[in-house]
Length: 393
Image (cartoon, rainbow, N blue to C red; front, side, top):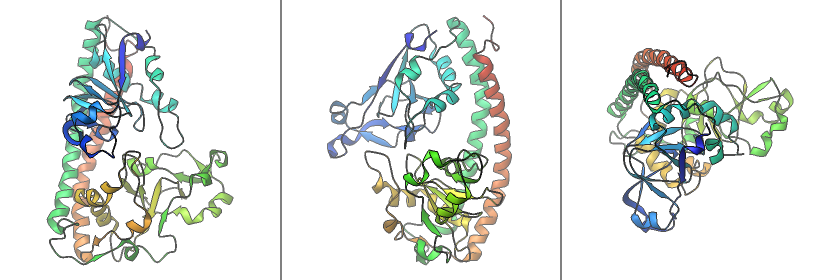
């Protein structure tokens, strides 16, 4: 059946950032950055009733299905509370013939489809007809509910493993604060410095990616030097390889080269500031226009310490929130970034911290292995569910 014959889709919008009376109200306002789990129970931003009335945003009653049509394309979640949505999200209302939990899992199974059809030079997006034109199996409502219930049970194990990983991540953040304090207020009175004093004595130790025009698709080749993308910084996954350049282009863009132990930082989008350390076995290559490369002088600051300092909540909110506009969040100008104050505890304390992080990381790695297995189980059931192999009518 054509999905669009069984659902209604409504969009949202953003109140003007120039009118302060539209913001900081009591109405949750969701955007892609709030898609942190399968259920949205809170949002980072709030608007007023006036903001709702004077924009194209919509109030979505609790318990409905939301889908991202830009950035995190195809990602779905339920809203646990009534909220307004921005233009990058759509709400899906099902008619009486479709179980919304069944549809939730069906749309999850279409993630590859959404990623493949998404278009856009900077920010990928899909159109409403990409959702409505999907051909779906539509068994009886009772069968839909059985399928959803089986997938719910498989998902519980997956979510438990995710929660355990989150607890280990919270533990390392608590350890950082316990040992070093808030890096913004600096209650322990550590020496402070800036990034230009922390990077290696290398001309290109601190480098933003090249202008987009330097990496047009027509220059890419089947193999050669890898072009590192935001995906690598966001997912800390260096097995991913999509674009390559040849030796000549690499020499031309050698200022943007990345090497093992370099840090790459995402410079735009809702995942602004996400980072990863280039591993020892990484492919030789360069960064693209959406990344910043940092090569630290590790005699001054260890990579592990920098990663936790840079991602510490108050540090991010203090130095990055002012750069979030109505459009796509962007990294601050390099002149501003070079003025960010970094605390600089003694190296022996940074090493103690790294050792403890490593011990926690070993436990976290076990939880991640368990998560991989539960993800494989869940995804296997997900694919079988919509081939009619999970429940027979």
